[in-house]
Image (cartoon, rainbow, N blue to C red):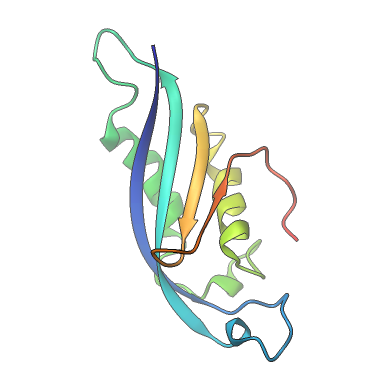
Amino acid sequence: MKFELRKAFKIDAAHRLTGLPTEHKCTRLHGHTYRIEIAIEDELKPDSGLVMDYNTLEQIAGPVISMLDHTYLNEIPGLENPTSENIAIWLWERLKPKLPGLKEILVAESDNSMAIFRGPSTPLG
């Protein structure tokens, strides 16, 4: 029996977008409280009744996500243009080897603006 399991994380970070016209407001330094959701899909384990323990998911994803917390995202290698889309890809590339059942990563920079990445990994650009 297949299930999808989700764990949400929150981080605070600053960035500026580099791929926009200079007059666009997002080219200026600003910050967000990002909501990041990690979704995995796998079979229910009959012995535990779980797909994966939420604590295990936090132990795997938490250290990677915390690399972005309270940072200037543009200074992180691979995030020189840290759009929500590129953040999702960056996370996917680091989490997929550790989470074979990874299904999607959601990165929300506000309650109504978010990007969802479902792989496979592609070069950032």
